[in-house]
Length: 211
Ligand code: IMP
Image (cartoon, rainbow, N blue to C red; front, side):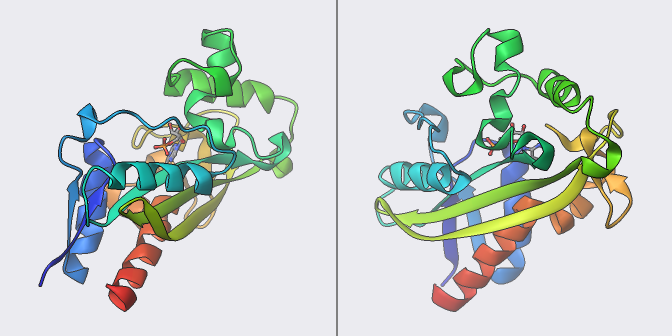
């Protein structure tokens, strides 16, 4: 029997990455049917875990009996006490909407988010610009979270962007392990080294043991 999971996303790039990694495990991956027309879940949790669980539980009600996977991710910068953290997608809201990120009406664009990071770090020297990307995946069925999986990638925030691949904070995130920013990685390298890839591999191990 083929095992299958439904992902709570309409992001084609994420789906492709997840499907590619899951295929060797005999696991079929698809988006939740009609995902874009389901009522959105408000991501107001204080942690990545809380948001991932909230999304997985809510969306799993739409597909009775099926295993649903939801993710939440972001960038934690040590010199900013972990900011932008769960507000990574809306970090530039004070610049663009005159609101704090947790009150933002919508996500702010990558360029503005990166500009705010560079501004906040302008007085922070190179040796103190450590950061990590974090991804938490939650697996839920019929409104109940069965397990969560956390992946991280440790790096350093540069003082100017480098590279044109990827999205979000990738051009500012230097990954010492291979001497490139995340925006200088191919899609295949990104999934090998990224927080999302690590969390998804932990999920696949769990599937192999429990499903
Ligand atoms: P979400 O979990 O897809 O909503 O991501 C939240 C935000 O975190 C994104 O809008 C990006 O700003 C940032 N982020 C998450 N993962 C990555 C990544 O792999 N590269 C760059 N930025 C990321």
